[in-house]
Amino acid sequence: MLGQVFGYSDFRGPQQAIVEHVVAGGDALVLMPTGGGKSLCYQIPAIVRQNAGHGVTIVISPLIALMHDQVGALTEAGVSAAFLNSTQSYEESSQIEQQLLRNELTLLYAAPERINTPRMKSLLTSLNERGLLSLFAIDEAHCVSQWGHDFRPEYRSLSLLHETFPDVPRMALTATADALTRQDMVERLKLEDARHFVSSFDRPNIRYTIVEKTDATRQLLRFIQTEHHGEAGIVYCQSRKRVEEIAGMLEDAGIKAMAYHAGLDARLRQQRQDRFLREDGCVMVATIAFGMGIDKPDVRFVAHLDMPKNIEGYYQETGRAGRDGLPADAWMVYGLQDVVNQRRMIDTSEVASEEFKAVMRGKLDALLTLAEGTRCRRVSLLGYFGEASEPCGNCDNCLTPPAVWDATEAARKMLSCIYRVQQASGISFGAGHIMDILRGKPTEKVVQYGHDQLSTFGIGADLAEPQWRGVLRQLIASNLVRVNTEAFNTLQLMLDAKAVLKGEVSVLLRQQAASTKAERTRRGSKSTVKTSVKGMAEATLNAGALERLGRLKAWRTDVAREHNLPPFVIFHDATLRAIAEQAPQDLHALSSISGMGVKKLAAYGAEVLRVCAEPD
Ligand code: ADP
Ligand code: ZN
Image (tube, rainbow, N blue to C red):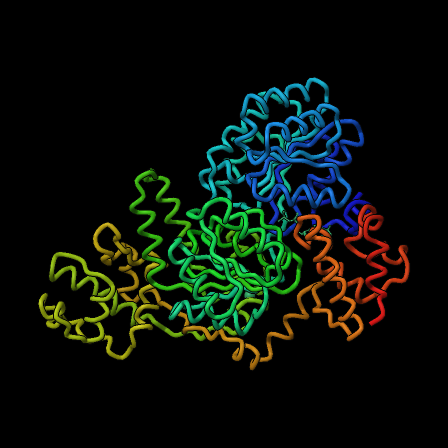
């Protein structure tokens, strides 16, 4: 089935075990990183079970805007699939319902809010009565949990599935894996008896880089221009306003950038998403409203201009880079202000309970520790998901080990300054004021409060402000200092600060890491890493192959436009590359190329051979 329909020669990781278990009618919980290959885990069982007379597999997916392309990709591979959603007319929906009742479909995509409608319920009931309800596949299943980073209330109604159709097998799939969310999924979707399949969360082709924010806009521009010129990428920002600003700035710099956020009307969003998927080299500047389910394989970078809320969000968003297995970058800038903003959002949330806020603060702290840390980023990330690993050689900390300086003395100075100021004035002050005192700057405010008379005035004149900011971030990340966002972002000492004040604990800090391409290349690290990552050698094509690739891509663009689908749905870049390289002479040779299934060979094989052989 794998080779015939999808044209792949081997299963990846646990795919085979999952497929076998689900084909046999077992329930499953599948945790796999973004880009790991979850779709095949329900698509193949759907085909096998349909062939065995079990009827249709219902795929529950929150992504109405992507259903058209998902169904298109299956149709291209010769699988009969359809979707039911609010974009269709009554007649269109009725037609699909008829097809279902005649058992003509293998997969049906529907949004969770649809499942609970009376019309859908009665349709499912009719199918079930005829023995034509084969499997429920719940995609993005973490949306059912408020502990996940993308809670969607409509997922709660999916309890209907096990309550009304207890005998229909269920599988839940997600790329979010923390223990709390997992537990919640199991309970809410009633998967206690399901087998759990947990893959490695490693994405070896993604290079993680986290740099200190100095001038975010300029840093981003330089990053794109030097490392990803003309390539597709996603830039995440916190607010809609900032999304608009950054997209405008990139456009002015001649980059094909678009803004995307929930404040834009649905038509415009769909248009921009389609352009991002269909046109080469577009950069989407977006809030987190964008990206779920985006299966564009050749996104070469994901940049964060503002810090996400937690590691789950960060990992899910960065996972959208490099699904094709070729080298890709996850790049983030962050600074003290990000920390303060995120804390404030948690503290001032009026809807959240104290318990919820405490969990959110813990998750934010884990992300801060990752950002400030000096050890391998991948080891830290995978460790967060409970997976042990060795330093990767493909992150900023591995490639350019940050210089570490002993900040014990500086940390003590800062802590004692915060303490003295609070003691002398009976109130707390913010970061700027504390740093002025440390650096011995007699500002109006410093003098007004008599803080130039304190013993800590000027004791930190030896360090520059950026270094003090680094010290403070680290103190916040280690929970020694709290930013009280309910009182003008003033700084407060936490209990554990005592040990540092007394000199019992030492504090090691990272120097600001170098992160430009020039510096990395000088160290000769980039090229070695690129080829050392498994199975993604940057194929160097000879002149003839390059020309063939150019022709094949142009042909693919035409076909994709004709079918109103993204080009990668017709053939992946990797498939076209292999064809260009091997220049197959007949259908038999062509059929052995990865990504060339039976249906595609029949539909396009002759054309591909012709385009490939065209005289230069
Ligand atoms: P996920 O849903 O887990 O994020 P997808 O199902 O979109 O990931 O798969 C990611 C990419 O990997 C897709 O382009 C898919 O075609 C490809 N893929 C999945 N399984 C295999 C396999 N066994 N062999 C080759 N490519 C695969
Ligand atoms: Zn590393």
